[in-house]
Every structure is written in C-alpha cells, then in structure tokens.
Image (cartoon, rainbow, N blue to C red; front, side, top):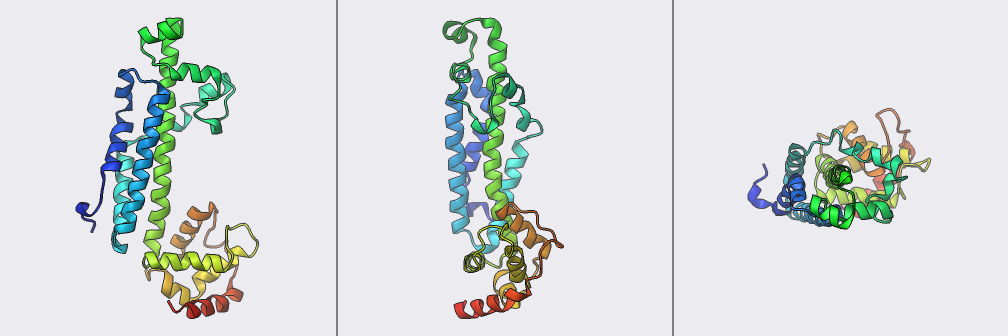
Length: 256
C-alpha cells in the first residue's frame, strides 16, 4: 500500500487549489490571459511532480500512486459541460478550437486581455452594457482551459496507470519497449504490426519476462490502445505465430 510520506504532492495540491479556486481569482480582477499563464505553470509543475514520483517509487507502489492522483483529480473537477464551453464563440468569431486560446484573434485578444471589472472595462474597452458578455467569456474560457490542462494530466495518469497494472516491473516495461523497437513497431497501422503485437502476447518467453501472471489479454489490448490510439479488441489482432520464434530468440539473446 502507498504511504503518502513516500511521495511529493505539493504540485498536485497547488494545481487543484488554483484551478478549483479560479473563479475567486476573477474577483481579484485578473484577465483571462494572465490566469491562463498561471494555470499552465501549475499544470506543468504537477506533471513534473508526477513523473518524478514515478521514478522514485517501487514497482508495486506506482499503480497505487497513479490511482491516488486520479481520484484526487476526479473528485475536484466536474467536466460535464466544460468541453462545450466555447462552442457559442466558435461560429460567432469564426474560431477554430485547435487555435485555442486565440491570442492571434484581435477581437478575442482585446476582450480577454482586459480585466473584466466594471470600472476597468469602462475605462479601457467601452460600453458597460457588454460587460456581462465579456465576463461570461472569461468564465467560459477558464472552464475550457481547465478542462484541457486537467485532461492533459489525466492522459499521463491513464497511460502510466495502464502500464503499471500489466507489467511485472518498470524494467519489464523497458523490455517491452525495446522489443517494440526491435520489431520495428512504431504504431499499429502497418499491416504486419497487429500480428507482431499479438505474437508478443502469445510467445511464452515474452509473457514470462514482461507481463504479470494476472494480466489479462483485455488489459494488454487496453494498454496498446492507450499508447497507439488504436481500437484493438480480443478478436481484432491477427495471428502472430510466424513471429513467435523471432521474439523467443531475441529474448534469449538479451539474457534478461
């Protein structure tokens, strides 16, 4: 079981504190772009902390740590509507979501570079009747920024969490990655790659050296799908029998 004294959590705590209290920061009259820069800083710090913790934890503690971070993130953030927060603005201002945060758009940049307090808006932008519109823009853009950054953290958690649960150890994961390189598997799209990936699972030597005895093929496929962006199922991998001897010989030559 994970002992919390074994890990550093300040980066995670600071990110959650900042992102959860971001609406309070709005009251302090900070512009969207000011807060966005701070959000990126706390997000980066959190990711750096996660990677450092994974390096120092024992193999049997990594999964518990990743599960701990995942629960903390999901407990503090609700994303039911956050991914749709910018939809009303895309058509109105002719924006593409992949260009977020749209700092090159003159209109958006002007509206979101200004603090949205009534006195400041009247002084620097103009008609106070537009204040509510601008305030809502700030809130919606913050919601989407938090959505993007938090899912960036969750993607790292889920990718490592899947691997932590199927490999015997961190060294076993490295063997798996070296085997992918040896078999020239860079993605899942090359015609022979599904057969090679299946052969890794089917070959006795690789199963013994790489995967936990309790690992199911379903879990192996979930891991492949997480690293390759594929959609393998238990029935979709073609037979890899022609590669089993190649893999078996490679494992023996490495003398792991």
